[in-house]
Length: 77
Image 1 (spheres, rainbow, N blue to C red):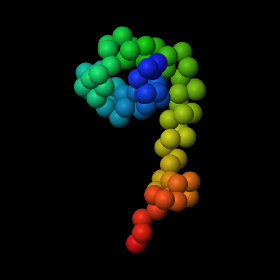
Image 2: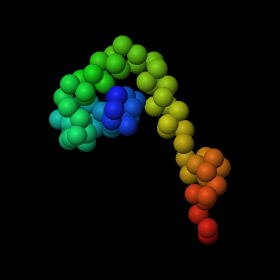
Image 3: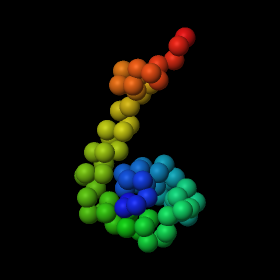
Image 4: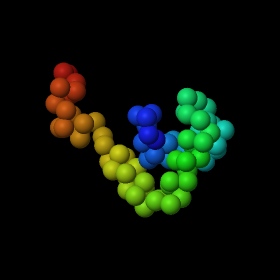
């Protein structure tokens, strides 16, 4: 979403996590306008394969992968 720092895939992942409840999505992204949220949903309708791929890539991250990529985040236990 231009100028927000939020990407469409993040909004769609949240939308899925709230069981596609638009009211809950609006509450989660209260600083975005209804038009911005509708634009994200519209973009997903047009480019679902691309967005699904990005969500899938994000879901592959786990603590070990983060620590490998960002060693300074490894716990010191």
